Figure 1 (tube, helix red, strand yellow):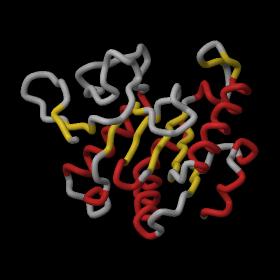
Figure 2 (figure 1 turned 45 degrees about the horizontal axis):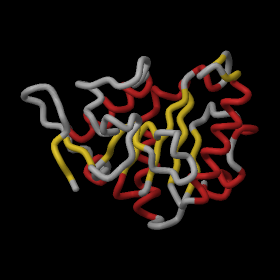
Figure 3 (figure 1 turned 180 degrees about the vertical axis):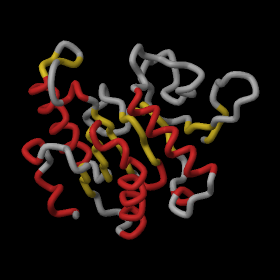
Length: 184
């Protein structure tokens, strides 16, 4: 079910109706530009990613034509219903997580970064077990987001139905899901 999201007057944003939401009273698919739902969400890194996707689509980049419908902050990974995914490309069963500095040092959600890294590993394992394709971006690699994204989309198309786990360059090897090296 594709429908127009609640957006500011004059905007044309679309979403997918059957995905779980970040908050039960709101759609996960309310436009991130018009209806921010959580303080600090979307992050500056996520906004950069959304803008890169939209710009590639507006410029009719050949790979962007293959994106299909994509949404933000949707709960789609089984067993991780409390963990919304930063970006979901529905046609490709492809999810993208963009990890800020708090995943690697300091605290996030009152959890030390070491616990956040364990949660990230558990999420990656759940995504792999559910046959998702996963791209996990380190905040220091966001300048190359578009090239990672295009490579991941091409991988989705070339290897239909095969899960993969892909990490950006600066994502620590010790924190990666064991399957990442099998999917290069």
